[in-house]
Image (cartoon, rainbow, N blue to C red; front, side):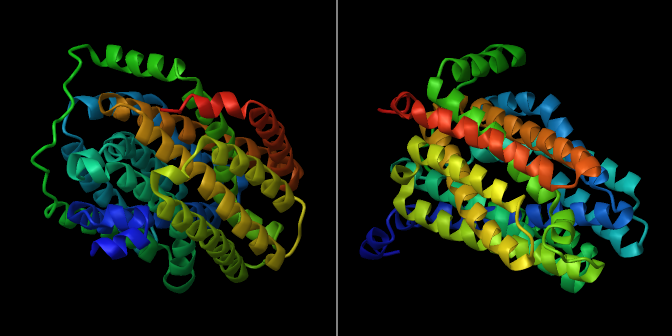
Length: 419
């Protein structure tokens, strides 16, 4: 990429001027997209098998539960050993898990019990892959381009959270759930192939192990987070934000039927795919804007405003009726959620020391997953009694109140990341 073109593209151009980052992006983006294709396929399969919002919540909870137990150990291992090797081993296991889902779905033998077991296995695998993946870029990207690469990687990774489910809805509609699970297997296969072409820069220095026990390393990470007021504040906002966003995406089959008015099974898939596509479009616009700005575009102040906007959008989603209105709100939610999540991840990755990155980012993902599981189970179980509107609006109003409180203290939060 020429220097003039790179300068016009801002942070995007700076990151993609690194050959390793271009190679890594192909595998990483495709594997993240297919990861979320499988997530929506698992939710839709659970809905088809049970027609129960409670089972939708249970499948999401089983996928999250291993993270609560194993992510701290995954983060400590990522700071002790070669993160690249950890990711390769975990992605190979994830490819096998996706193939098993595809075979069972294609043969018509995938039961809710088997789906639950495979959801739990999925959570175990990614308790180790995620901490390693968050620390991969310093292993391969030149130091002078690292901050821009982190910002761009955070942007397209978060886009996958929206675009992946949208793609999953389209694949399920036209080709069925077996094809969606096969897509995830293919995504991991592409990553493993692209990884063969990555080369470690000559000036890369791996972080030195602390010499402490695994438990001691975990405790050091907890103390570091607890002592950083800015990180504490952003993680608390991420807890509430992901409780809402995970509940929305896990409940999308029911949202398409109950709130958007797409009553039959066939139109329900169309409605779900349309809502996912609208959110994916909004997220893509926001991510491109953040990526162009590079690391400088991700600020704590923007996280606070985006969090407040997301809470307001969820409240509106719980009050409206009809597919067109729901799509418009989902597009807005895609923008707000992308801004708050990507900016948070970019800030954390850029501000944390290399030898602590695995533990801090695994803690971030652990809290994100725990909040998502809790939000999903609360909304899903409450919806069986009151319908979806009441729990969605209630959670949104709590988040709006917290967002207003955080904005009152924004100077203290933003100053924690200065310098």
